Image (tube, rainbow, N blue to C red):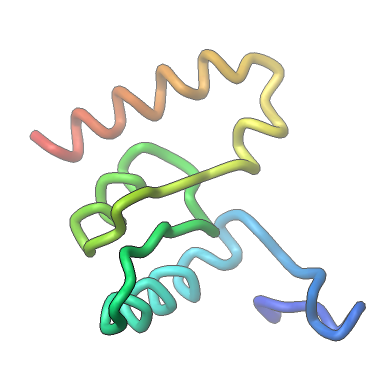
Length: 88
């Protein structure tokens, strides 16, 4: 599994858990710069949101789980519960 696609000059690619480790690595790299960082990619639960915030991201986004969900509100509730558990 490559974290990128050779289609469209690499602008099309994978998402979700397949790129989680790469996204974390990129977050660490960007945190060394002068900008606040939003972390996206591979975020699939509230535990991951908490981890990325602890790493230094000012915002964390996850789209795929909500896009695929039949009940996005339930996903949000689960992520909130995961986040609270991770922060405890």
